[in-house]
Image (cartoon, rainbow, N blue to C red):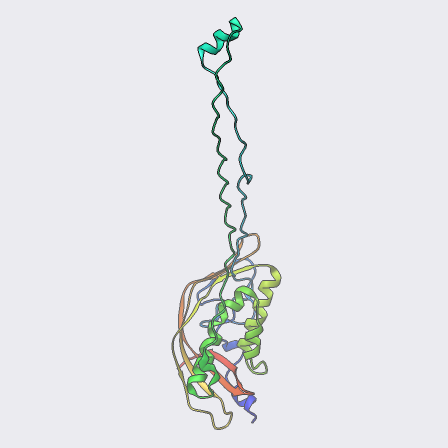
Length: 259
């Protein structure tokens, strides 16, 4: 049996940890599609929320530059009026009027869009030992909400052993479907609380990593704001098979740990 065949045993679309939304998620509108969320298996398929980015409106304030100068001269001397009537004497000179420029309006700062942040790749992933295996499995799961919200599958694809990892392929398909539909997916933040890597498998050369994980609530909505699906927080343990080859870690399979 080859390394890929052995590593893929027990991992398939029916047991994928989650390709779309946390367990217990309510689905509305379109039905859930293939795959299941990293922890339990509620459908992210149909349409599950993503990161909705609200368009920021820039409001420009007032005209700039100097304000209009106001010149005001007022003669109030009674003697001047008398002189004008009699034709005698010169009126007192009009005192100069001080003027000041109107203050320039303070420009309104341009709002900036915020979105999901791609998790930082841990340095431990450069190691080919148990610590590196655990770091790789943890990083892969933490990529999940980012991939679902953005449709950016580049890093996810680079770590996927596509011949055997049904979970990996399912997440990719759903993330791209959400992006194509123009839907919004928010939440499902994935936090690893513990990760333990086993010994090297003498047949495949891979390692099994048991991961305790917490996945936050999620919501998927259409471009019009209609709810497609949502779910609450989920906690569980995953079994992730990893393999270090060609100088990097690959995810061979992932499923809920039933033991």
